Length: 257
Image (tube, rainbow, N blue to C red; front, side, top):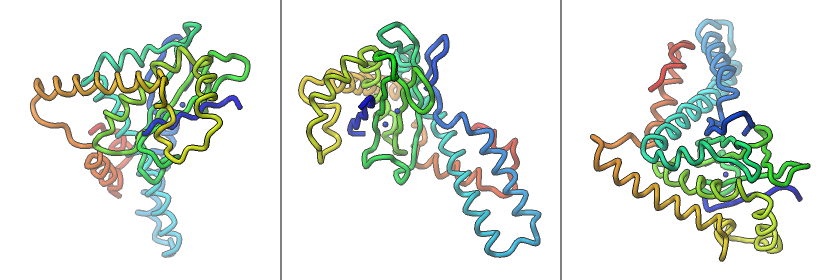
């Protein structure tokens, strides 16, 4: 099996270009989603011939689009806060390269609990390219990894943990896959959070080092900043309300909070 699925107590996707990037995992579909939502709002406000059933179906579709756009904006905020609060962590992952020196993009998403792929607050997924054991590959394309973090006010800490895993795995993918299969591949674990954190797992150790770095950066930021940033849970609710306004148009949807 050519795939590593890292369940790290708390998930990951990308494309390769001249430079690695931390990217928003929702970005590829955001413009189409905004346009679709705008169209649905117009249909609901001008469609006087809509039956009750048709109106309900349109509202359900609109709800899904609003959630997508809200998660996109929330993820933008997550990435921006990591850059501000812990710039050392941000720039290390922004410039991550594999064993052969090739840049690897890191796709990040904040997801509602009900959309999590596994029953954990965050997790990392990596696949090896078919013909290159040192190259990662995901649904976003070659030379990529991806991270999913469930929406919580602790999301930045969880993201720092996942970034620690990525920091070790990307430049050591072939060797780590072999280690991973030996340690975790023969046993069915009931505690999924153990995977990626076993004895002698350097990926887990690096994740814990990144946790510590983030905690120190967070403490420094709080000491030198004015006031607390709004939590991600409250911000998610605010975004859904804003984008659900039936009177808002496509320009309003693009407005940054």
